[in-house]
Amino acid sequence: MGKNTNWSELYKKEDWLACWLGFIVIALACVAVLAGWFDFSAAKFSTWYTWEDGGTFAESMGAQLNGAFWGKLLRTFLVLGILFTLGVKLMGQSVKEYIPAFIGLFIISIIVRWISAEFTLNRYLEWAFWALLIGLIISNTIGTPEWLKPAVKTEFYIKTGLVIMGFSVLFSNIAKFGLYGLGIAWIVTPIVIIFMWWLGTKIFKIDNKPLVITVAAATSVCGTSAAIATGAAAKAKKEDLSAAISVSIIFTILMMVFEPMIIKWTGMSQIMGGSLIGGTVDSTGAVVVAGTALGEEAQKAAVLVKSIQNILIGFIAFFVAIFFATKVDKEGTEKVGASEIWLRFPKFILGFFAASLIASFIIQPAFGAENVGAINKVLDQFKNWAFVLAFTSIGLDTNFKAIAKQMQGGKVLWLYIVGQLFNIALTFFAVWFLLSGRFFPIPVLD
Image: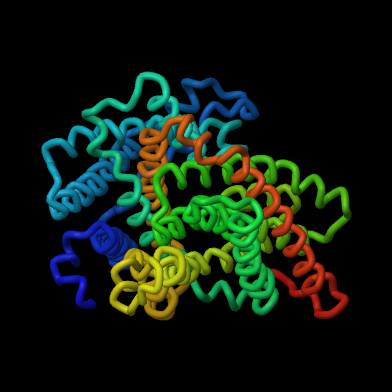
């Protein structure tokens, strides 16, 4: 493990604990689905107050708030509460202070999930936006109560959620779209990150380098998840994450609405339009919505490109950790050895990769894609709940003055805008080159 580490870190440090907690959730989901011994599904709010169906508020609420729902909600609370409390205990922190704080944070998270499930809001804005917004409203009005602060553990929740998310990142997705998806997602993305790094540090002269690389990852990969993983690798502050995520969410909403309109106006084919959306819209959920607006084929292409792009999260975080350890954070002529790189490396990324490899090369070959899909259906909600806890914590731990300060006079906003325009242009060229039919046969998506 290196001379600067010891074995106790495996059960005392946040990064490792996030791996173990994530693996416990994954293991329970696998046993529940494959053996069928128990129900392990987490709570999910169905869409409510659907005016299109002519239903009333009471009817739409009553349809989902039944005994089964409350049972799942209790299960979700107990599973996450017990696991995170165990993690807090192993890290040597106060369980007595954490438990009531976690209960309060979970109640706020329930409100977030409920609000984001409203028909209109659910159609255009993801729960990540509402989690961040509600947290910000509390912290910037009445202020985050002292008793609630022990549960504000943004990175712990995020890292655990990302390990769980790793199980859904299947390497088999590459085969579905072959070299087309790789060309769009894996060649363009590194170029955009390098361009934005140069733009932010050399042209805009932004001193906060962890913020620059976090914004670059959010722009070029998949918004919040990439920002979180890369921010951890670069040791970005909570304020850096807030700024990067805030900018990403704002433009994700705009692109989700207007990019399909522009694509339709240009007469682009569905497979090209969907691939362009998959490579440029930050959030996976927004990619699905925007792709659906173009048609079924566009939706499939968008999701495949974004899925292939998501595989890069771990690789990017890995290389960012090495780059910051050896180039950015080193002092003077100090030589940074392998032990120092290992010390700084975000260990939860190993959990992310391990979960992906287990799903791709062990579970799927042994039990089939259908069972893997069923497992991921269970894990997806636990991942979402962990992320809701995280994004709400970001809001509770941040104020608008801090976000404004991180924008550095608008430089961060312009970094995102210019970087995203470059990303769109480069992705469009890759899409045209690979999928226009001029140079290569157009693939057929089943």
